Image: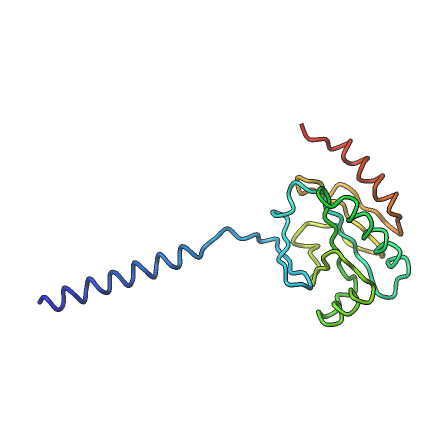
Length: 166
């Protein structure tokens, strides 16, 4: 009888410890997270509070190469308040995507999968296309065609004035 009691207590302890371990490993995950080519999970929840510029590009698009150069400078100039993300329009597989990002010297995160559905982005019919998401997580502007660093900065300034918090 004592042996059964000890076994029951052991089973209860094991079950309690396993439950605690399982619950301790639970955390609120961002269901909008998409992986970058570097393995980062990037989701809208973690981007809150920043302006997000999501740029769709293709390897065959010369205007996209110009946009990428402008966005690299733009991201460097506005690092604390802006996040720039790249999305390959042709949905290249990760090895080819990494190679293209390296060849084009893309310094900001490039997403492995298109976040359009998860993030509620409009359809992309031409490249380059850049969507601007405000710090509250809403798409507030669509930029079609090639831009310059100065024009991206003007867009940011205009949107900051329009969507001033407070």
